[in-house]
Each structure stands twice: as C-alpha cells, then as structure tokens.
Length: 163
Image (tube, rainbow, N blue to C red; front, side):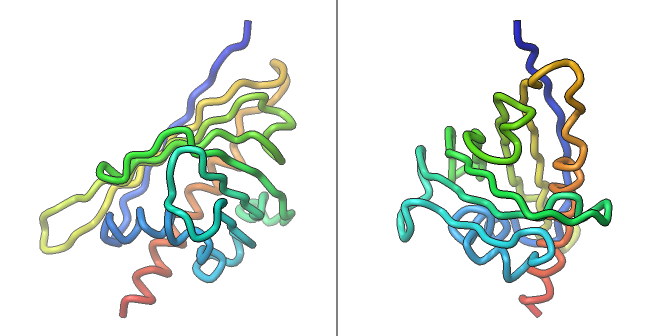
C-alpha cells in the first residue's frame, strides 16, 4: 500500500496578499521577469483564460539553484482545487520532473492577509502531499528549498517594482 507523505512550509511576505496571489495565478506567465534565476518559463493553458479547475500550468524551472547545481526541468500541473476568494490553489503534478520519483504529487498554496502594524503583509503557506516511488526515494528537499527561495525572491522583486 502506498504511503502518502506531507511536508509544509510558510513565509511571511511584505507584499500585499491580493497582489501576491494574483502573481502566482493570473500573473504566472510573467514570473520569469521577477524570478528569472528560478523560473525560466510559465505557461497557463488555456491561454488568455480564467484560472479555474482543470487549467494547466507548464513550468520550466531551475532545480538545484539553491545548492549551486543548476538544471532546468519541466513539470506540468493541473489545477485540482481553487478558491480565489480565500486565495487558495491546489495543483496535481501529472507530467515531468517530479513524476519520476513521485507517482503522485500535490501542491497546495494558501495566501492570507496579515493586517496590523501599519502594513499589509501576507502569510504564504504551502504543503506537498506525495507518494514515493519506493522507500529509497528521498524527501523532495530540493523542491522545498525551491519554494522557500521562490517566495522570498518573488516578494523582494514585487516590492522593488512597487517603489
């Protein structure tokens, strides 16, 4: 019987929650401009359409960038849950790099406003639920580090573009 594993992470962003969520959904094709060292290309299908259940994200991104070993890989994700009002989105990876070692891999991202202290920050929480191909497959540490670096850099670049 397959064992499902789960890892979680979070990041307090200085960017406004609405803007950050919009960037990772509707603005996703522009992400290479903000985080070019991590995201090489992002395509949302159907193009020019609403981000909804069944939309496909095609990511070309850098793995190993946080460890200094750079390689660009492609992954295709399908949106399996989305709640724009509560800024929550879930993707299921169905093709590409992650499917080699993980027969199932789901990514959930939630963005929540943090009000107070004179600024509008946001809390970004992500979780990965995955099944390993076998017991020798490691925890997806490089992908965890990728997400941490991605949100940290995206937040910094968004703030830079606002000023």
